[in-house]
Length: 451
Image (cartoon, rainbow, N blue to C red; front, side, top):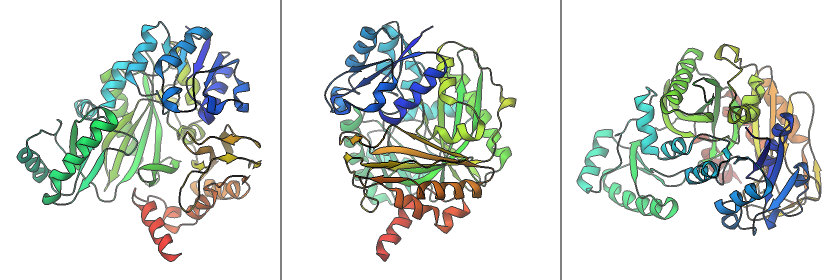
């Protein structure tokens, strides 16, 4: 049991967690770096504690500093949000060893699902469909690597076992390129993740990126909360998400969702989590599981009416799920646009002071943000400054509401990608639904060629 939660994060997700805690009558402690000192949203917490300089490695990523802040402030639990330490098994274990509650899955589950080879093995054992490829890591022997690729069939994709965030992967289209790609990716993985282990899979040509949200308690109960489509990506980074994933057979989606819950039971998972799949030609292929809260969780909340963060806190408190699978309903459609402080044309981040901040509103419109007029956007962190979420009875209605919301969202003092989102909403392929993961980059390239 706990009554005070330390929020080991910043920005909009820190505000989102604080509100959920307040709804449950829990006190909150927000940590902050010197780069975030003076941010108005810190006033929402019962207490704010500075944990170091602006650089993330000396503050939000400093496990010792965060843990010491929790112990010194009297917090009995730590919520990591997303990013930073949210999927760090060592940190989760340290929190537990200190006698505190880590609001997330066990350190063992984080480590297991963070290792892409081990995760794929666990999912195959649980009957979850996976991308074609061997179960184990790539051997060092070059001839064996070439043999594996030939058996899978080109093109193949080389991935770092400990990778994430779109890093540590390379597509290989022909035999002559394979060994060099493996060598380069292995060294990149060693430097970026401290783990040189690689694995190989079939590279799917035009897949969609579809997610399934799960929620499990500590008593062996689990449910899945519908699907999300996150196919609009640039450099493997999501730009716009929606729920449910359009155009997929409901029966097929249910079968995969049930498998995901069974997989959670198989590995003893508790908390919230997201199974990520590639979907092509009517088939699902597991790629990874995120053992944390997702940036795009609001679209699932809007379609199901379930407060995912509140449920995450309740699970950490040891409560049994009060929701059964039969209670879960996906009503209407929701979209989320990630609003970044960056140039809409070059994608270069733009730090600075926000001089005007007029938020949209109306039926079916939600804005998650930590920004207000006068806020100084620091240059040290992710450039996302808001998430605009709209909900409608149909996808078309959600799109109309998103167009209106973005048009009425006025920001001055810094550049944003609002113009880009408005242009995406007018793209005919996107309006029709079901674009693949390569669509946005191809669209951007075509757009740049015309300018």
